[in-house]
Length: 285
Image (cartoon, rainbow, N blue to C red; front, side, top):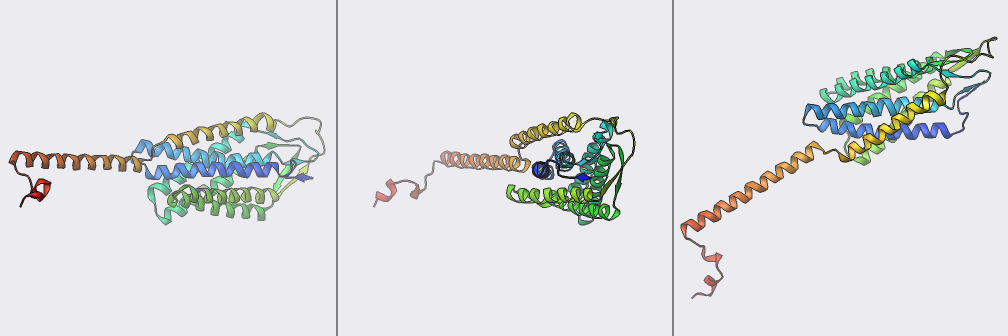
């Protein structure tokens, strides 16, 4: 018997919240990358956005939700190599998709990038499933796999459109809430198509791999700490456009001050004062 919610609603609620937080920080970083005026600044924000969206909003959400997955009659262990590789895959494809979307900025490239990110997200999901070791064979219903792919493609394309177009905290928060729903829906739709055929022997022997508490918790906690650091960068980072506007305003003020000083100096040199510039002129007959 398969139980997707062995801890009740705790795992899906926490997974959704982490996905929303990762989406919010990732989309905010994407807006900074879009507005960056230097190559180094743009790459910094792009990497930060890819890690937050791919590593936290998608990968962390998946494995937090998997902590509630149980199969009666067999323990579950995780292959560390495949688990970490699935996270790197999600970050990598999201980084490529963000770069293409922000640099190209056309609808055609948006669709191409959405396809790259969507296939990458689905691949991450099933690579994460393949990292699970148990006393049984896991099978996936093709109908649910197709539905998960469709949701992933749509969610990835919409997320990239958000990264391309949105500005402002309220709009990004609304987009993040929607992203959390889409990523969670993709995960649980795919999971509903899972079936396990238990083996009839070797149940006394523990499957190879690490327990979720030994592998997943440190990785998820590490990414959450990264989110806190990323939030600090966003709070302390200077918006390039705003900084440029402030510099331009300062230069304009300096030019106006210099012009006024030059005019005053010119008037003093000529020894001329306008009649309306002196109060005494109004008192003369």
